[in-house]
Image 1 (cartoon, rainbow, N blue to C red):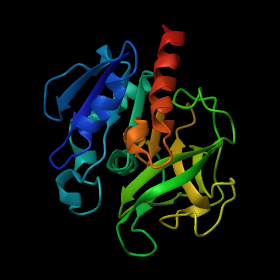
Image 2: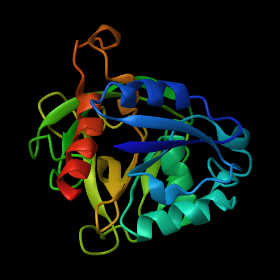
Image 3: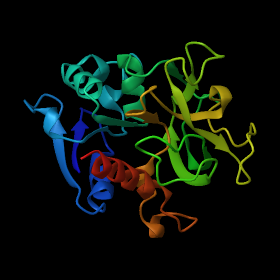
Length: 235
């Protein structure tokens, strides 16, 4: 699996993401500066990592979403390539229109940094095929503008996006306490209808080493392994 990790001014999770992906057997990862002249079609997966692109000026992800590289990312996705936006990368995907809705400031008005439990609601896509449906996993979040709100509050599958993960408690129940940012419907991750574009606020790259997890788990690694599994099956 060939992977391009796009770096913008203010990106700060790019090297963590590359380290995580490089732990996937057979993965080859390139760090790509946003203005580099690069042909994305040679890659299987493009990742927009976390951070604070352009210092979150205007809105989180708003400036990066309007750079020329995003036209290439859009074309890549339209041709069936895999695109993953993590935290700020999710914000960029929403601002660019590649995923619907908006990511608003957290309901408590503060930066939230903690581990959360998530229920995997969609396991048929490229990024979750190694998870069980309704499996409860644990990943960390770290953001101030992560409160997802859809364009149509009653929308869901079949209306432009699919809910892939929701914030839950350790027993899999949706509760206010388990929702770190006030996201509508406890939504933590969505994909487009086709499933090849995934945006998520939690950080899978920070849950790929049991030494770094308070639960001793590597749930994030399975997301990258799922992508590699999908690419192998599509080859």
